[in-house]
Amino acid sequence: MPSESILTNKHIILGVTGSIAAYKACALASQLTQHGALVDVIMTEAATRFVLPLVFQSLTGRLAYTTMWQTDTSGGLGTHIAHVGLGHGADLLLIAPITANTMARIAYGLADDLLSVTTLAANCPILVAPAMDVGMYENPTTQANIDILRARGVHFAGPGIGRMASGLEGLGRFIDSEEIVGHCRRVLGMSGPLAGRRVVITAGPTREPLDPVRYLTNYSSGKQGFAIAQAAVDAGAEVTLIAGPVSLPAPIGALRVDVTDTRSMRDAVLAHATGDAPADALIMAAAVADFRPAEMANHKIKKKREQAPAPIDLIENPDILYEVSQQAHRPTVAVGFAAESDDLIAHAQEKLARKKLNLIVANDITAGDAGFAVDTNRVVFITPKEVDELPLMSKEAVAKCIVDWVAKKLGSPQNSGR
Ligand code: PMT
Figure 1: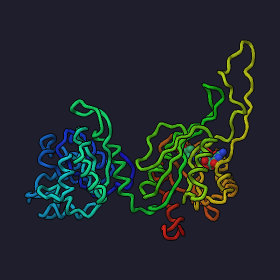
Figure 2: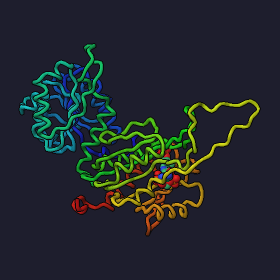
Figure 3: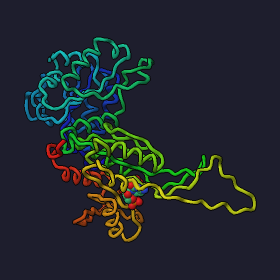
């Protein structure tokens, strides 16, 4: 079960139209519900030919609406005028899948079924996920309708490129439900406390090459940093996620910059967080290698018979946060992590001062339920003035606490002077 997020208790209307991808909307309805959203499904008549309303009703635990003329809303909407009640109470109207036909109808303001009248009456953000054949999608009429909807502020999720039910390949494929959930978070977060702010986040390990097949690294999975990136997107920030080598998907809406070693992470951080237009905040959750092999061998280092292996000489890597602190134009708020195995607070306080941070998030990496690779963390927030011990939480919950702290520190965007 996903932990509390921007989707929790949000009222989402899920419009489902008559595409074969309607069956994938079942997984989408289920995922949104598991995230704690209250999902009211409206199906067009064509959609009911692909999937029974009962399926959505069973997945969401709420009434699935199919007609404008429905008056018995027991167990559902508390009003008999469904199209007004549904549209006004919602946080988001998501139409997924949306066909070329429904796009054309809402672009021109037609209002002859429950979904089209709800769309016309809605005063919440609208997000659509197209699904249709490549020829229909690329048709100039469809493209013109897309332009109309975009110009009116409708948000789009996809379509993707790939194989369609017809067997054809091309643009028009319904994107994965996880991605659509990501778009819902992006759109719901747009007016959040970090709207208009630029936040750079680092995550994962760095890899320091020894020879073409070996490297020095650490156990960082990227989970904590990626959770912070998602929390920052949820709060409306423009997010750049600088990621060491990990296989996690980046949050929808974040710009991902992949790096491998400490020096490439340093270059990316300086390019994205400092300079003439520095980021508003830098949050460094990456586990950066302090040392690297003094030399990288050009060939695989061979085992030599009856000879001890040659020792590896190490040299110091650049300290990225320290370098940032020395820049003339640096982020307004700088947050570091401290991964410690002993004397947690004292070591973290020393790093806070030396790297000129506003906040250091200290975690004991010897605990089994905190630090590297696990899904939970137990952290201490340390500022120049305070030490605040937080209880054991999911990494998502820790991420939200950090993002809330940063948002409070930055204040409203009008205070930034930019
Ligand atoms: O990725 P996960 O598996 O979810 O694990 C999360 C985590 C344990 C990696 C994370 O919570 C964490 O503690 N990250 C910081 C790890 C680290 O490098 O700590 P440090 O105490 O060595 O460094 C202090 C700070 O300086 C960190 O913000 C680090 O990013 C930064 N640093 C470190 C070395 C260096 N050469 N340059 C730096 O900027």
